Image 1: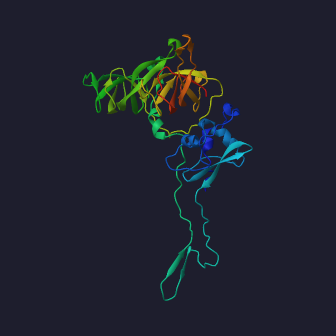
Image 2: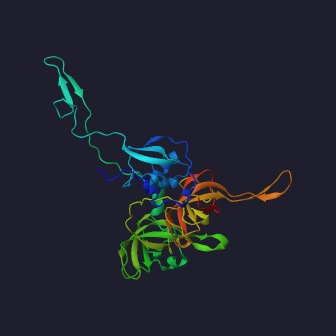
Image 3: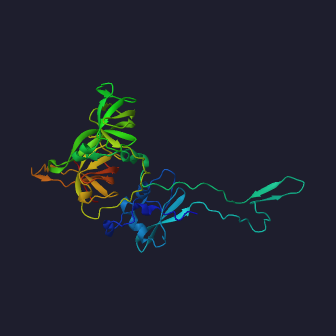
Length: 363
């Protein structure tokens, strides 16, 4: 028996500061059955306009003693207590008691047979059927975020200088691909057995022209053949051509995708979109964004920020006067990775296209 089915606390074990405002109920059903393929964020949207504020609802529910995870088949019910909305996990939609049969049946197999010497009639009763426990519902779609967790996304100039690098191909190629051998330098006394290869990308520039670091572009994967000065490696796989000067990052076995705790920032945060992993022109839902706020600025993993269309000057057609329109909210981004001066998030909602340079702030 699992310890608990209530996983919406994955949306945050810390209540957001904005919970002092009244929560707005969406066109919500009073009863929702969790199905395979659901995400916690998606379920939250069924009930509330502000999905990241769901933790406060669970915290008000005193029936919850050991909240943990929710699973496909669980039933989420919306109730009101003292004027406040409360979400309750009533458990699986079907239940049976093992080993019980109707009184007087005289059998423990869940069936009875009537008739002697004539047609046999079998009456069936509910019985227990064992089934493997489904995986808990994730916070967001893992396939949307997994590619961005398997590589470093930004590195400072100093970090790039300290990494080992590709020197040249054994056969003097200008560039090379899978199964090509090459020499590498600066691997150190204890080189790794495998390396990921990265190309230095464009600089990430924040407000006032401040350089935040450099994007890294994944090139391929290589294995060590012979250590030394220079060391000899071979390209195992390549997404693009390998060039001299490409950096080598020791390969590490990937950890499982973590669960996230979406919540509003504890303190006011203001920043801008500085890059996108999908497109620099049109950015929509489930696109990856780079923001010019990092751990040093108070950013934490799981923070949800609102994306705004930049304010612009408008002209009154009657008076001829111009005025500055306020920024207009156009979407939400949840941060999944933080670096000292840069953070990366995934667009969870977008009402229109997002662009590099758009401002972001706490909701």
